[in-house]
Image (cartoon, rainbow, N blue to C red; front, side, top):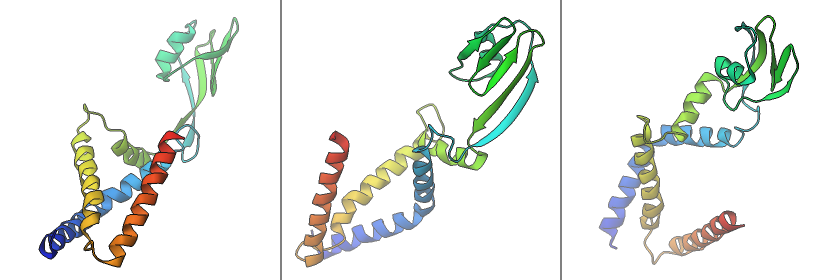
Length: 169
């Protein structure tokens, strides 16, 4: 690995880093917020009152309200209670609290959750390959004979050990 190759890789690393700075910020923010997806942190609550047909079953209420993983917590002759709300069988009145991620944050998080059917999945592949390039090209940032490269190898080894510990412990 000569100085010319090292300089070329450093240039690609630098300009790809500048190009991807915005998307890296999006992934960083959305990645941190996705850690809290099973809580109500970063989410807004909306009180909803609507009228459905009377005398629906619990499954029908869940489908009509479009609540994923709907399950009734209790049911009487006149009421179906569920997480964050209730349904009156006699009048058809349903009142519940909808908890959802704000619009902009939801858009940011969708970058992380793209699947092969989503138009964004090509972006995810490109971004993943770019991050892999950053990992590999970091080792060409300095010549192997320099003290900073040798010190960098110690940090890389420590990072590898930490990664293995986090994966398997």
